[in-house]
Length: 241
Image (tube, rainbow, N blue to C red):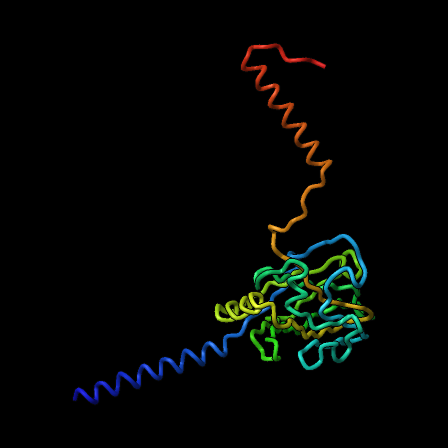
C-alpha cells in the first residue's frame, strides 16, 4: 500500500503544479479608464509627449504598434512609435509602476451625436528579441468626452493591473534597459482626430521643483513668523503697521 500511496501523492502534486501553471498563463493583466482619473497638462502638439499610438479616421479608428510593425498599422498616423525601454527611462520612468499611459481624446463624436467609445486597448511589453513579456487589456468599453483639446495636452490616465509575475518581468526589462512597449486600440463613433495615447513619468517623487523666486518668498515668510515668535517669548511689543 505504501508504494501506491506515494504514487498518488506524486500524481496529486503534479496535477496541482500543472493547474497553477495554467491559471497563471490565463491570468493576464488589465487596463481600466475612468472619467474621474484625468490629467490636464500644459503645452500641446505632437512631439511634446512620448506618443506610442495615434489614430485618425471617421467612424472606427483602429491600429497598433507592435514589435513586427513598430511604426503602426491600420488607421495609425506617422506619430506612432514602438517605445523602447531606453526611451521610457529617458523621461524618468524607472519601473512598471511609473509607466503612466494617457488616452488623449480629441474628437467629439460622430454626426449622430454620440461620443467616442474606446472599445479595445492592449498594452504589451516585449523583450529585446520581440518575445511578449507582459500584456494588459481593456476590461470594458470606455466612453468619454474630450477636455482641453490638443495633442499632448490632456487625457484620461490608464490604471494598469499586472500579475505579480508580469511586474517582476517588466521591472527586469527596466533593470537591463532592454525591451519595448507597444499598444493596440480601437475607437468607435469617431468623426475626426487624431486621438492618441502617450506615456509620461507617473512617479510623484519627480514632481517639478519650485522655482527659486517661490522658494525665496517662502523662506522670507518663515523668517517673519520666527521673528514674531521670538519677540513674544522675550515680552517685546510687536510692531504694528
